[in-house]
Image 1 (cartoon, rainbow, N blue to C red):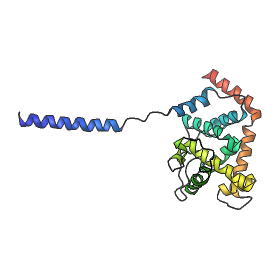
Image 2 (cartoon, one colour):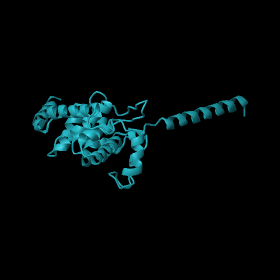
Image 3 (cartoon, rainbow, N blue to C red):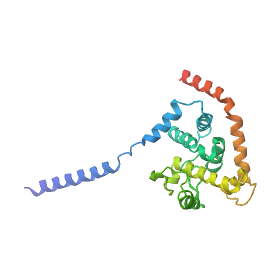
Image 4 (cartoon, rainbow, N blue to C red):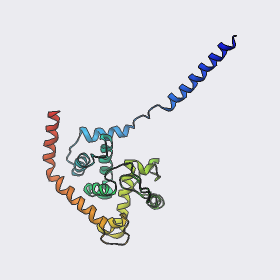
Length: 229
């Protein structure tokens, strides 16, 4: 066979192999089914008779807009609702998230290493791993995603789980919200702190603006938006 023909065939085979490798490595990752469920849950069934769910939906819809998309807002809504056994107060959790990260899911503090919406410190991850987890804490048995790592700490669902579980531990330790918040914000041993004051003021602001008593108005606004669109 002519050497030029052989060389051409070899080149074509090499190019096909390279293209195939690139194509395989650039396939988009499949969208997680759970993310879609979060989105559907928060958009198509916005209001219920569950006050905590309704508050989560309104807050995630109204106060997280700047740094999140629809899917991320759905995840925040569902995660705060699912952790209600640790806090029973979505207004407080949304206030903490605002103060910690301004609702930026992927933010990492370069100096402290704090991660995600609730700015989970590496030391907090280690504590959860060594104590809350081993003592049969709040994380689902058999679910490997709950193992605290830097990777899971940047996932919205688990970041909020870690933060609220740790807050519950601090509440039990100190017996009052102000001191628990102060510890969470880095003011260990202080009953009052600039951090706790900031969080509680934001919580009051959310309660005033998005109280359960105003849900009927939000429902009317949502219904009107659907008619317009």
